[in-house]
Image (cartoon, rainbow, N blue to C red; front, side, top):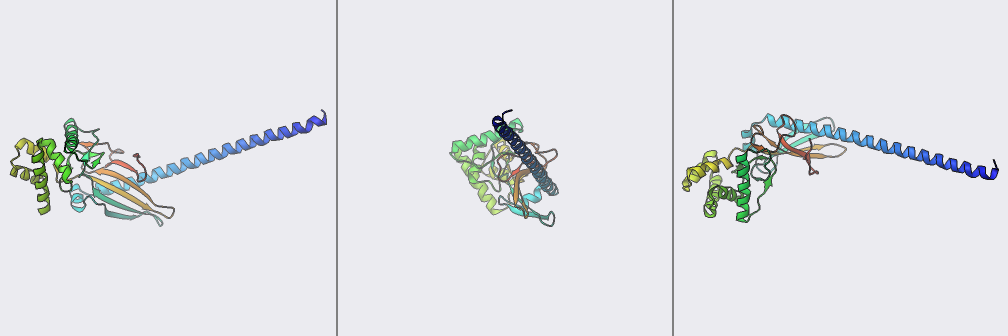
Length: 263
């Protein structure tokens, strides 16, 4: 072979070999990065489930009545746990049933109809209610806003003036003393509300909420993480949403900076 052609050929072969090695190294780096990400996601997923199961176990050890008496709509510190030498877990819990239900999957037909009527009543009143995506249709009468009480009342009574009167009477009642399930019926009876309507109000306004918001915060040297969820006590029957896992109290669970639920 002419030496004048040999050198370019050698250079070409060297270039091809170099490009091949570079491609292989790039592919290997990409695969290593993908594997590392999968490992990180695996650890994060199991850490998240561990936190959820710890919170779930604690919630199941407490009765709904005890929680309802101990917390309101503002988060309250409930538990501090040292997970190991470097990490701690803090649980915060608040009552979450004072808002109107805006999602109906999993509800019995009558409950779904009740929930829709409450939202329609709010539109009729021209008010915007605070809503939630899970839990029972019944609303906690002790913590509900006046507009929410008005919407519930209007959904049953179909009379704005009577709905306003009932909402105001319930607010006066809860300011005087702790409300009970009998309080709703008693106030309605005092206002001359018929028995069928009283029964509807008692069904939609509860003094014993079973839906609670839980926030779990992990504090660690490598950084903090937080998770949030809605948990229902006494089972999820008659509630919108499904448990995030078998036998779980949680109807929702997500990382605090994410919009989608994780399981």
